[in-house]
Image (tube, rainbow, N blue to C red; front, side, top):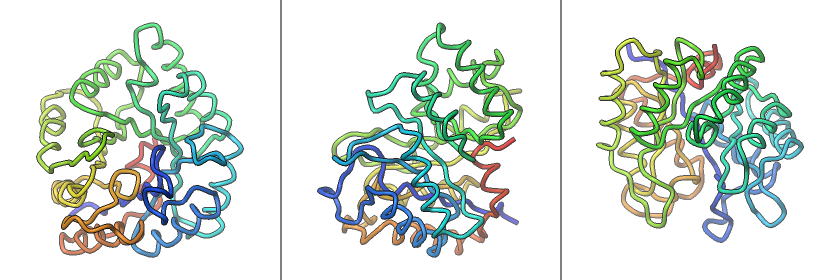
Length: 277
């Protein structure tokens, strides 16, 4: 029987604003309402970004606490909240780590190339990863390509990133104007995983861009992976029409999952997908 599926919604991201789509949430209350609708549509988790009054990306402890509290009040009790440490050119690795320690979330996504940009950053990053394990913060490692994945495996082999089973997010494409992903962008990641030998076991999820988001999600679901969908990466249907809202994107993935026999993951299963020990 296929493994239960975790569908994560990324409702806003760091870059898009209401000028891009009026249904993009930018306040804690708006985000909570959107996430609750996505849970009803078949989602198990949310990838949360917070914004300032000008809709700019923030890494802020109080703002994260506020949005998590709002989501927990409106979404089902078993729904999972993941924060991000995405830098967007504004934050240093130390600031990224500090916000995680301040919030102490149940889950966080961290780009390997941002947190460990060079050898000098390894010791502090390694201590931080160990802290996350002790504090039971599920870490999902963001990999933007096979170069990132090679660096990730090297850090794992040398113990900078600890653990025998780790959660990763394969990003199929790049954040750029008119980016369109294709399902075959998943292949190099899986080929590298299969050749890794005695590396850690990976629980993997994908995100993809533009009209290609759905095709990439279908490929990932068919191959046993998990999916992150929503307005952070795509505003469009496979046909190029504008998606009504984030819940519609989640529902589209849920319909495909049902056809593939992928049932909904539980809270515990979802946290393991996201890197819980």
